[in-house]
Image (cartoon, rainbow, N blue to C red):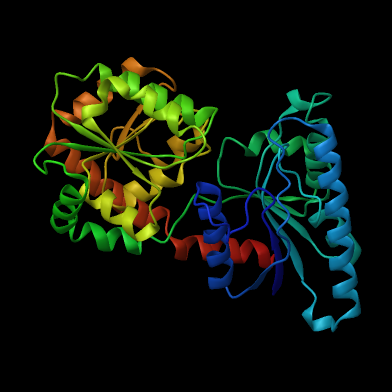
Length: 376
């Protein structure tokens, strides 16, 4: 099947790494592995982060122009080159889809959405246009794929009666992480030299973009939690970058001698650093589920994270990691302390984390499930 794909928030070839880009690439891999031919049909980034109605209107006009151009291209070309289905990844009020619904309707093909959310509080506000566009897209959708189980119930009232609802567990290609974990000692020595760390000290790892909002709040909770653990001899490596870098560094300023900022890393380097670490620590405030959390578990890392529906779907509390109430720095510190004080428990959690990812969150299983759902 020929699939026209689109990611209004961030295309899969965008130069800046993020969880959104990662998932877009994984969905492409899963669809391709299932035997479908995927063409990323649009590069328009429709996100408006400030609630500017004029900007939203301009993006909608650009989207209408690009949709019309795609329709002309496919209608005037050979029929066998037209898409059989439109697939949009990540639909929400700040980044609506101005291409897919129009193109799918004009070509008479199914419109499918992966990872959508509805925020009724945005009705009538600065993002009202994006909110209404999301509702219109959902009403047209033949199927909605949810990776975060917390999203699915809220979508149901806005779908057509015959629309399919598909719950797809978050997934990844675990091979690079498992391969790095098999050489854990080598990676630990290499990263200790690179970052000038003592490999005998417990190494905590946090991965997240440095941007205002929930990411910055998560870093703040982590910094507050670590202040409770000053008596323990740990080190923290932070991976990420972004416009709030100064604010993130300020949050950790009282702990600066124990914190290393590694910047942005490619997948291979991150896999090696995860293999080198002892605990993955991320408060995950309002996190959909967290690709980095899944990657850490694939690396055999125990996780301490903030509790949320999506995070709880990938972290087995008390088995592959520990979940603290979201935003509770004291509870987060207690969870971290329990793993810092118990190397055997850390190791057991890590083994069980890798096994869970291999059994329930692998690329092959996702490709089979998604491919079958798309074929139907």
